[in-house]
Length: 108
Image 1 (spheres, one colour):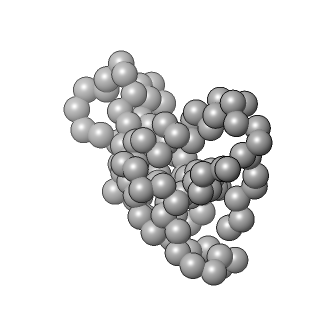
Image 2 (cartoon, one colour; image 1 turned 180 degrees about the horizontal axis):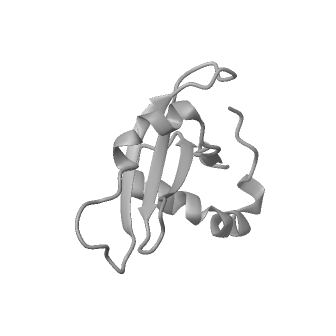
Image 3 (cartoon, helix red, strand yellow; image 1 turned 90 degrees about the vertical axis):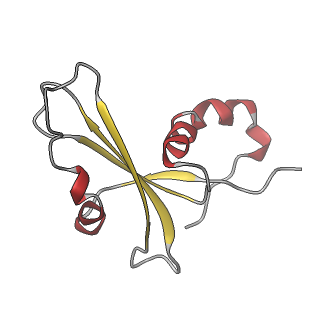
């Protein structure tokens, strides 16, 4: 028997999503770090084609020597902390290899 479906799916940025993280898109003050500065933000969002609001986790990476941050958005039903949702998303390929009988597509 498969466990209830949990999903974490990357979605493309749009103006509404970027407005939600606008406060994270300003370069951090101080001397640039050699390590990337990473920020997370969680909020609810409803695309026009969705029937209800869903949780979105944003990850903003500021890397030394880069003018603009790297930004990613993940829509999910997980209740974990934002950093752990990203970790789950990044590890999903490995999990699917070990559970081929339980994989199925998530319907938005």
